[in-house]
Length: 140
Image (cartoon, rainbow, N blue to C red; front, side, top):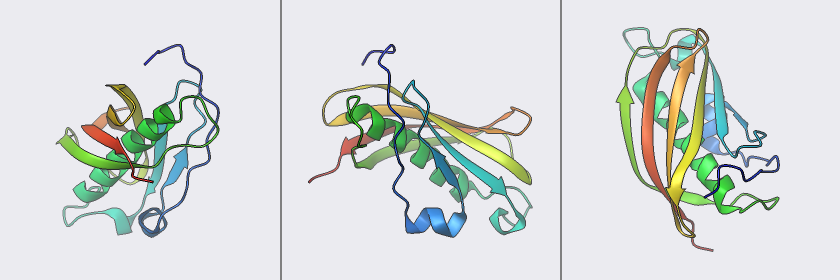
């Protein structure tokens, strides 16, 4: 997996989960990374008034998974669907109301299996959570 490989912008397919939570997906970075962006509102908070951990995990999974999808496209115009085999998440700091961004990057892998990581940062650039995951090319 070459770090110098340039990736075309990709169109992200939407999902019911994305529509329910309301995050945006940005697959335009030429380095193949993927960004998932959420404007955190009261409806995204848990009972202690911070961003719910399940939403952290969903965003981290989506960002890392879309980065894996872009990598498997091998520079082509269409991303490749993947399924998550594992996702290990660490919560570093709570996120409050405002914008948070999850950025996913591929760390390695091959034709079927890709290892990726993602981090969520808040509007001030503070690390809120991170994850590593293993993603598999979805069956056709």
